[in-house]
Amino acid sequence: MIDVSCIIINYNTSKYTFEAVESILKKQNEDISYEIIIVDNASKQEDYIQLKSNLDALNLSNIKLIRSKINTGFGAGNMIGVQHSASCKYYAFINNDTLQISTNFLKDLKDFMEQNPDTGICSPQMLDEERNFRVTIDHFSTIKREIFRRPILEKLFPKKYLNRKTTYNKPTKVHYVQGSFMFVEAKTFNEIGGFDRNIFLYYEESDLSWRFLKQKNKNTYLIPSIEYIHYKGISTKKNIDIKIEQKISLLYYINKHYGWLHHQVLLKWYIIRYFFTSIIKPKYWKLFYVLLIGAPLSKSLMQKQRVLNLDK
Image 1: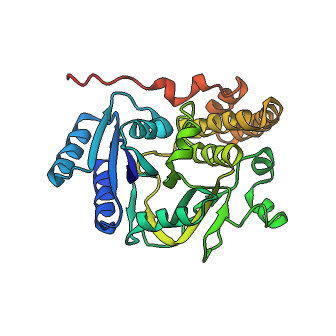
Image 2 (image 1 turned 135 degrees about the vertical axis):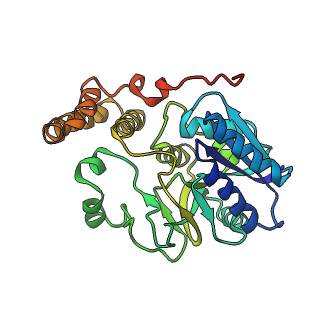
């Protein structure tokens, strides 16, 4: 059994993926056994070939490249990596648009987990390209959070809703951390079934941390002494389809964890909100329509993916 299996998804951004892999190799010494599994999520042929060429040049036995014939999204893509991983104590789910800057970060995260058995998930502090603070933690999604918004909840209930924009100086228990870097206890992850494959993009990390807490009483921690750079949004460009995907995932998450009534209240809230938003910004009519019909998973980008013909 190895210590850590690092899993990275590539989607048409091989340059960033290779740099992410290099940063792991440069910052981690041999005090820990690990592998790096890269899942190519049905990228264009030229992007995949470039990535494979760069990785082959490294000629390292602990690096694997797996190609999926279909873009399975974030959670399911990571689960492909899990299926090809060696038996391990921890998974490190790392975005491809990241750079590691803390020496021996895998060992330090492993040590923290072993010294704090109540921990199921932890994450380093995220920084931007200029190494400035970037928000890394968030609150579980609820009707309260979506309607009243984060700043109000943080002000009214500071103990339950930690200030996301505060710089913390010691390990801090949080609701969940951003999915750009999640260091996860493999045994618990495997027992609860890993990422929910019904979610194509967004809220996977919130869903995972919630299940760790509610099913296994395992907490999520921010470890601010360890840091990484996240370019953010390299693979996923913001547009109306992405906004639709966010709402589909959120409403699915609410229904899954809080039930039909909560789902319906939030859905109605969004229908009213985006009706008026659409009058001012017509591009939102598409989102309003999807909400009006219930934001079903059938409207997810997951349903629009096509299987690649790798023989071409």
